[in-house]
Amino acid sequence: MSVRITIVGAGPGGYIGAIRAAQLGAEVTLIEREAVGGTCLNRGCIPTKALKASADAMALAGRLSEFGIRLEGAVRPDIPAIQARKDKVVQTLVTGVRKILESYKVRLIEGAAEVLTPDRVRVQPGEGEAVEVAGDRLILATGSRPANIPGLAVDGTRILNSDQALVLDAVPADMLILGGGVIGVEFAFILSQLGSRVTVVEALDRLVGLPGVDPDSSRVLEREMKKSKIAFHLNKTIVRTLPEGENRVRAILGPSPFLENPTERDRQEVAVSAERLLVSIGRAPVADGLGLERLGLDRDARGWVQVNERLETNVAGVYAIGDLLGPSKIMLAHVATAEALVAVENCLGGRRVMDYDAVPSGIFTSPEMADVGLTEPEARDRGLDVRADVFLFRAMGKPQAMGEIAGQVKIVSEASSGRLLGVHIIGPHATDLIAEATLALRLGATAADVAETIHVHPSLSETVMEAAHAALDAPLHRPAAKS
Ligand code: FAD
Image 1 (tube, rainbow, N blue to C red):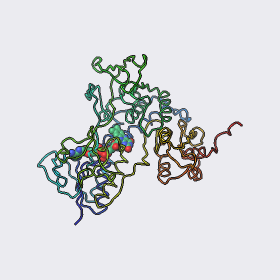
Image 2 (cartoon, protein in one colour):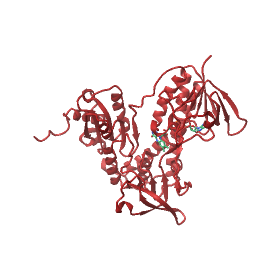
Image 3 (cartoon, protein in one colour):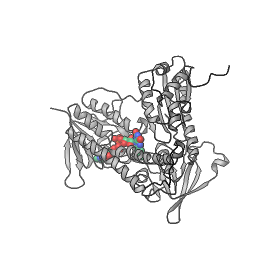
Image 4 (tube, rainbow, N blue to C red):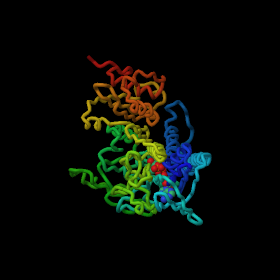
């Protein structure tokens, strides 16, 4: 008899797990209470990238004369049409996923799951009677939701979270964004390109100050934001908000709680008024009504589920994947997917260990950012014998031809062996270019391996190759050092 696997949550963790489990011969039940595709397809990766495509088109339209194209008349965003396009993209993908699940005979139950025991789950559909599902293995993939901040109530009108910012029916004249992390900066560019005056408030001393993002990339991003007239305040937070008239909000910015020795200047309060405030300060686990307490599942102080290296929880036969594992395991769609493949194999008797060493991240700003492996400071902190080499996109043919010259590729490598430790890109199509670097890191490649690999000319990937040549002290498209 085949193994029965129950999966709760049909995001990129859960639905991929269901497909793989079915491919491997399991009898699969997938339970989803909102929308197949989860946050990623419905409220995250895909809708933001569809909106970004419209915002990029708008930005390009503003630069047409640079390409020798004359435009007569004004370029204006049509927000209902932009939203309709975004919805269509989402629908196409969700429908595609549903068809694939159907083709693999995955039993999809639409309703809210409550775990009764490791082998029994009750599902309450929107209408009608609850059903009980019996299984041999359980995978929890219920994801995350926007986190709230005490004293700053999201009201869906003036103060929004990212779910609400995705369905705006007009571009706010001005937008204040609390949180200069990935979601905050992505929205900053989208809204700014669509015509909003955007201000970002970030508590850390740099934008996207995540561990894997190289500080130099943050500096380049900050420079590009200034060029795009997106204002930002670092080391600051919102200390209070006041309504302003019918439709606006006034925020008072004060020193960040992370600031160790605030100066007089840091302590000075600044008032910013905006039509809307987007709160994007992180995510919280989704576990309401799921019955995890009854199961006795180990969770940390913030509620993130704890697993071992094979992604099994402390309860035998119960696995957890995706955002539900929290930031220590990297909250990205492709990580949830990779974890799903590992968890499913282990449900079926495998002993696979989840490897987080070469996880790329992508940030869809303008220009894009992408990182894999150690940053330069991380590598130095580990006491490694490090060198870091940078090559600028502007030196190469394809970026010049495209008119996308901002940014750089930085290679962090071991000085003695040339072994790659990390690659950090900010520039055009960085999120695509990082794939080569990820494979190189995974295979333990050296800078010489990348430099000696023939790359298409002209292509953006040549900049990665040139950074590798630079790491061998022999960049080709750079004048010789003065002797
Ligand atoms: P989710 O996608 O959150 O899916 C969980 C599912 O479980 C949901 O559909 C939920 O309804 C369901 N569920 C919860 N509880 C129950 C229950 N009791 N019963 C039944 N069903 C339940 N990541 C990237 O890699 N690239 C990006 O560009 C990117 N952009 C993003 C942009 C935004 C604005 C946001 C918010 C996130 C973005 N992410 C991005 C992150 C990405 O969306 C998540 O990492 C990913 O969706 C996590 O997948 P998951 O399967 O763990 O959970």
